[in-house]
Length: 297
Image (cartoon, rainbow, N blue to C red):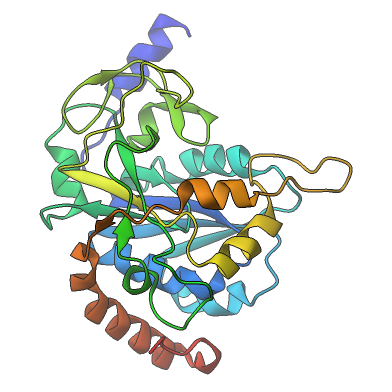
């Protein structure tokens, strides 16, 4: 990149934005989960959501109408397979003048600030352009089937912290160049983990020297499997970052389920949010006449 352009990008940084923290996600037929995902993240300080609808047919537009009217959600339609990276790079452009920090995660991932602070409070403590946040993998908790409760209620067991070295990023979108994979953005400036360690490139889990991340300050709860039946439904959707191969989407296998169905540690720390999340979903449904998306009991 031209040195003068790089210098301009660093200089051109305003201090006040309409939203402190935004999240971007691409989803396909996940309306059953999205209200919980939105309302939980609003509790920890996220106020803007860039949602990319990848050919859903489960009433997502109708469900999100109230958020869209209030400017909380910006919904973008993307058709076809393998559109994940494209969606994420669009999110960078959409968010540059609207949010101070942008996180890009999936609908089965919940950012948790471990001491209960707002997400923006954590990010402001680090004078860097991006932070890698480590996964904590939650298992099925022995559940075979979907039931009508919140995800954070149903799944309260996760793997030991030394299982899997994988991350997602929260970053300054004005310093972002492009996503190089669904977990990592090429940035103008330094990227760190929660311990302040400088990250120079994505720590791929296939590298034997990679160590699992520290998760004492902030983590991403990845509800990878949910119940067995939900995993099978997820498998049919394929991978959002992989295009169809002659009309067939690559599917996750039962080996993936068995590998990620980790339930060693009982962890009820997310339960403190459930009452308020349910209350907010109930209010949203009532306000927008969403009887078909009633509150989970």
